[in-house]
Image 1 (cartoon, rainbow, N blue to C red):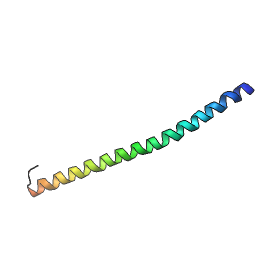
Image 2 (tube, rainbow, N blue to C red):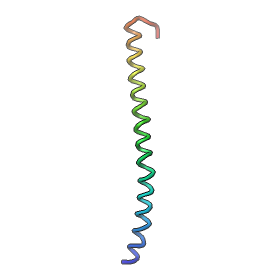
Image 3 (cartoon, rainbow, N blue to C red):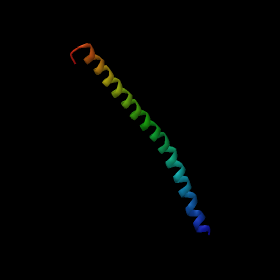
Image 4 (cartoon, helix red, strand yellow):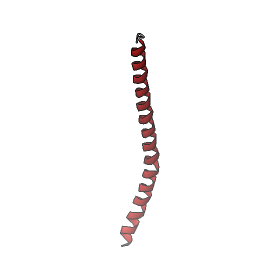
Length: 57
């Protein structure tokens, strides 16, 4: 029983630290991907507008 508790405590600390690092990393990754998506949609829109105006690309 004591041995199980001694193994559980370090694993809990490891899990807390891992989540503490992983959650902000996933949020940052989501922000980067969303920014790239918005930028590419904006670029496609600008390209479409230029084509409609007859500008050279």
